[in-house]
Length: 99
Image (tube, rainbow, N blue to C red; front, side, top):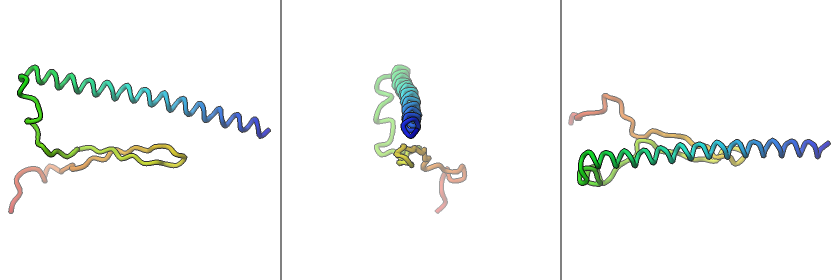
């Protein structure tokens, strides 16, 4: 009886692993498509504006991300990811400041 329960649990875990791997493959495909889309958009911008118009001189030398990804390990060894928006300012905070 215990062997049957063990086999059923192993089957369940294997199915969960295969499902997670399939989900991971799908998310990697989406990520790769977004990265490729970004490179194509940059190439289109360079073509439209000229080769010297879009480059490292167009943005600040020190930039801070607007979105960060925090990874942590949850129960049972599962990875947990959380998107944290940093530097989100309310409209009142934008603009010149009084001394």
